[in-house]
Image (cartoon, rainbow, N blue to C red; front, top):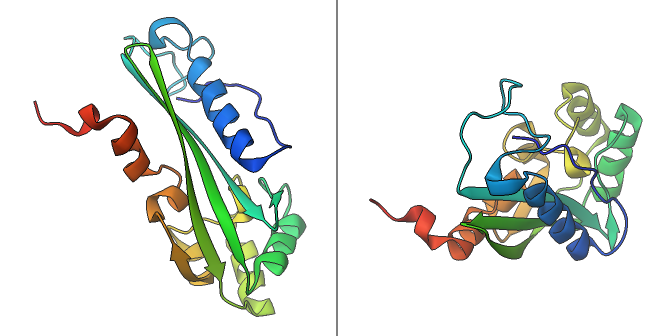
Length: 175
């Protein structure tokens, strides 16, 4: 579900992802019944949930939060800037279990290989940069941009599963 909250876009990166994740979790209203949220079918959920998981992920390059590129030229600019360099993928994760908020931040270092102009053009034309923090998605063609990473792959994909298990181990217990 998408809670429909306004995300912060400037400030300290770690605070941004933490506050945006908290805002998303809290935007789901009383008892987990979304105030403005809709499920993937576009309709309000029929049952309240006892567990809320909210995540916000940003890409940080040289201390600057890149956000989501708004155009192909901005996506290309991001690739130009990240080519041959390391950046940090930072996710704020909030898990609410029976009304208790649990908050954490995961950081992963991603190093892009030195990208040729044809590689950059192909990636921008492919279009998966749209709606993606940092303008790439590592789980598909974006993996061809990466030389190496240090840390959680699932964090770069968008949900730090290891941190989720740490914050809410009871979600991973068998009945």
